[in-house]
Image 1 (cartoon, rainbow, N blue to C red):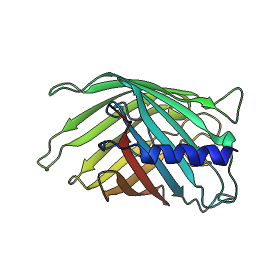
Image 2: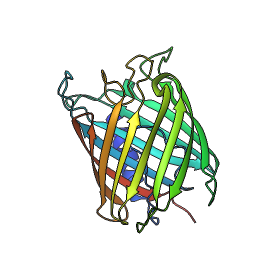
Image 3: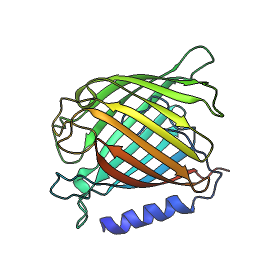
Image 4: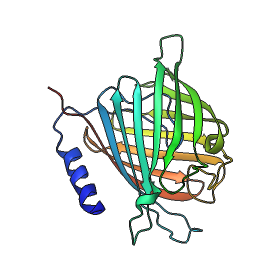
Length: 230
């Protein structure tokens, strides 16, 4: 039944006919800048961890704005041979202010607000962050993100997104060590570290990405679009 519901939801997402929009995001840490109003993203990825029991750890993530300035995200994962619904996590982010020519934008949020695998949910984490686009002589401005958080997001984290053009971009970030159970927001057993990624837009809707997570490789496919509008 769960698989049938998942297939139906995926089909509904993919047939929503609307104009596409793309927003450059950091890799694993929260972005204090939410997606443009009405935009959603669906990502399926496959991180590879040599030290894990299941070396390939397929995962999914859905991000979408549900009202002005408020973004919801669902993320989860499972071993390649079976689905685990109890791995689902819920994130919420509120963009309080937009950036201006002289001032950064500001956002706050809670990650792992809901953890389906734990009633006491030790992973719930709060963060506040700023973001700013900076012109450095390239065709498009780079974007810098700095966050401060609790639990899995404990301490400072940050990243930079570099769009070389409208199709090809790179990103790099520092992920905090964290203090919650399964403490990393990356893969189980990982601590803080440097992560970088490359992305290429095949079409305005479809994007492929590669990430290097502390030496481990991850591959992903991202679909971006807008909700049906009148």
